[in-house]
Length: 346
Image (cartoon, rainbow, N blue to C red; front, side, top):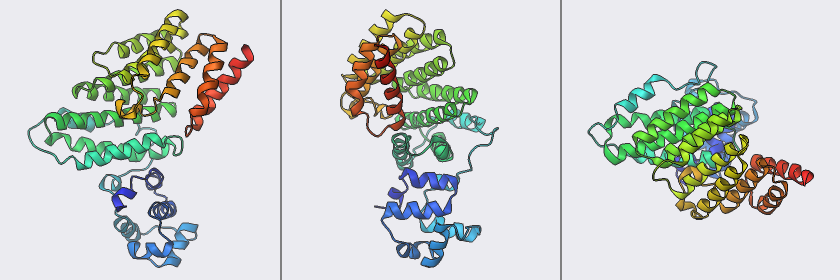
C-alpha cells in the first residue's frame, strides 16, 4: 500500500490530530506492517530512539524531529495544517469558508484527485465513528474541509457541484460532532452551511438529509412540533432517492409519534421501510447512508412502534433484527435497552 493509502487509516489520522507522536509511530507501523527497525530509514532515527518515543520515555519536542517524521511518513497536505482541538470560541464556521464558496463556479479547471482522496477518507471516518470518537477527528475533518473549499474558486460546472457536495458532507459531519458535544448553536451553524452548499450544488438527497438532521436536533431538544415540520420538509423534497426518502419518512414518523399522532407515525414508518427496501444494495444509497441496510430499516420500524407504545411489535421487531447490527456498539446498546424495556411492558 502507498504511503498516501496508509493515511486513510482512521486511527492513524486521529493520532495525528492529537499530535500524539508515540501513537503516530505505532499506528503507522501497524497500518504499514512495519517493525520499529523497518521505520528507521523513513524517519531517520535508530530503533532505540523510535522505541523510546513509542514507550513515552522520550518526547518529540524538536521542530526538526517533527519535520523529519512528517516528511518521512509522507503525511498528506491536508493534515499538515491540522490545528489542535477547538477551543470554546473556535467551533463555529469561519467567514472565510463562505467567501470561498461565494467565489465558486468561476472559470477554470481543477485537479480533483485531492477531492477524491478526501472523499475516500471521509467515508472511512463515518464508518469508524464507533471506534474513534468524533472529537478526536474534528481537527482532521475541519482541515479536510479547508482543503476542499480552497479548490472551489478555480472550479466550474459539474466539478464545482461535486466539491459542493463534499463540502456539505464535511459540514454535516462537523455539525453532528458539535451536537454530540452539546453545542447546539454551533451544530445548527454547520448544518445550515451544509444545506446551503447542498442546494447550491443541486444535491437534493443531501439537502433533504440535513433537514432530517435539523428535525432530529429539534426533537432531541424537546420541540416535536418543529421537528415534524422540518422532517416533512425533508420528506417532500422533490427528486429524492428511495434511501434518502426513507430516512426522511422515518424521522417524520418519530416526530409524529412525539406529538401523539400515532396512526400517522405508523403510516410513515411503513412508508420508510418500503422505501428502504428499494435500496437494498449499498451502491443504491448515498454514501452517508451506507448503514441503511434492511436490518436497520426493520429496527427503525420497531423504533417507531416503541414510540407509539406498541410494545409487542417493538420487542418482536428489535429482537428479530438486532443480531444483524454488528460493528455499531452504541446503536446496539440503544436498541438492546429499548428491547428490554418493551419486553417488560408487554
